[in-house]
Image 1 (cartoon, rainbow, N blue to C red):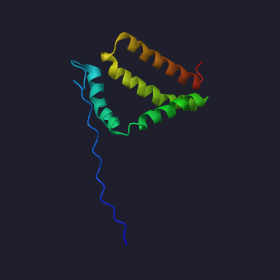
Image 2: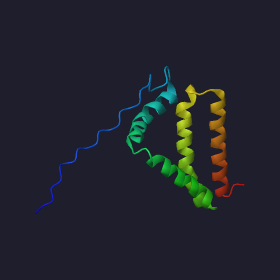
Image 3: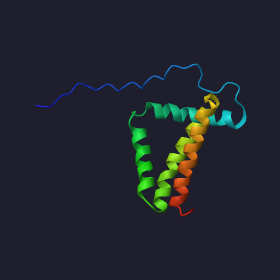
Image 4: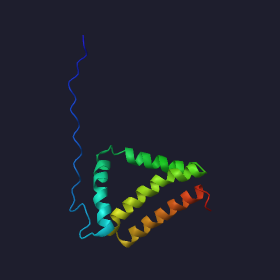
Length: 120
């Protein structure tokens, strides 16, 4: 006798969170280009399981600290790129204190990567 399961429905994608605007009002030049090109990637990342991106970033971050040579520096590069990308996208809506914290985090991550590549 065949084991028959009811057909599984494909899970609907999560709806986007409510918000007033997706892009910076009045943006021109590079900011508009980056925001326009980032929009599909942000939507794609939002549709992924919530746990996947943080777990991947923590794995790269731990690898960056655990590996004392150039491999640790390579592990830090995706963390730096992702953090810098999100900092750039959120920059217009941030207050001074939040901007300083984001810059400090990027400087710290870059310093860790440079030490792993033998820079200091």
